[in-house]
Amino acid sequence: MLPYIGSGPYCYSNSLAMILGDQAPSPAVIEVLTGSPFGVQLISGRLPLFDPYGWDGEIGLDAAIDLLGWTCTSAGASSPAEALDRLRTAVLDGPVLVGPLEMGLLLYHPGAGEPIEADHYLVVQAMDSDRVLLHDPQGFPYATLPLDAFLASWRAESISYKRYSYSMRSGFQQVRDVSVEDALQASVPAARAWVSLRGDVVVSPGTVGNEEALERFAELLEQGMDPGIHGLMTHFAVRVGTRRLVDAATAMGRIGLRDASAILDTQARLVGSLQYELTAGSMSAAAAIVRKLQPTYAELARVL
Image 1 (cartoon, rainbow, N blue to C red):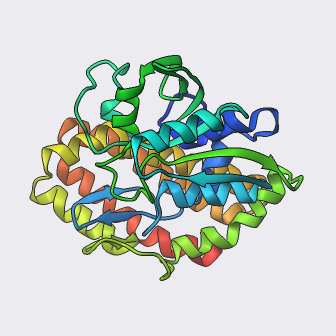
Image 2 (cartoon, rainbow, N blue to C red):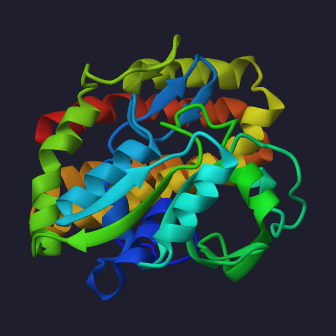
């Protein structure tokens, strides 16, 4: 198995790595600690994502921060003025992890200007009376944005899983010295719970996980997938899903869980092979790949 090194949409993991600085593990390790590789879900009966049933980025960030031995203050705001006041105070003590935001309203992204229901995270470094200065891990270091445009994105009206508008994490402090291996080992029970479809998360109506999600996904492919969902799959979901699985395979091998590592690598190869079939419009071939994935999640749960 060859670990993957390269670009990819790891916005919250890259953002957290920037915040933690010299004490941060690689974004690949952070992503595994969030729990994101350990499952697949079909949201509201129509949107396939290669992350666990009931999981979202906010849950994942909380898990990774704790597993690494850090704490922070997580807060939102009820108005634009309150949000700017909170951010202005927070950046005096250091960089602030901001998100989720609506990516389509980050106007330094070429072609941006309309909501696209795509969540995003970034790091705000400073602000003045007119603009914010930020590092956007999508490939925009030291980007600037007028405050009104930043607020429109930060409000995250189109992001259904947000806990509150104008969400940010600040005041990061290390409270325990945790090695990468210990953090990964400590993450295994949560990984097992995610891949076993734990029952203590709130999901939207029609959302299903793992085998059921994959069967429905295969049926959607055979029936003709919505063009918007198809675009999301080819531009984002397959790429990030494959990378998550490769990184999880590498991480589980690092702590000696070879059976889990082998299954995750198999999953990564299958999900990665979807990219060509979906891009080429070979929907029947893509559906066959999706069905090959179905039994692997129960097997992963067993070996974990």
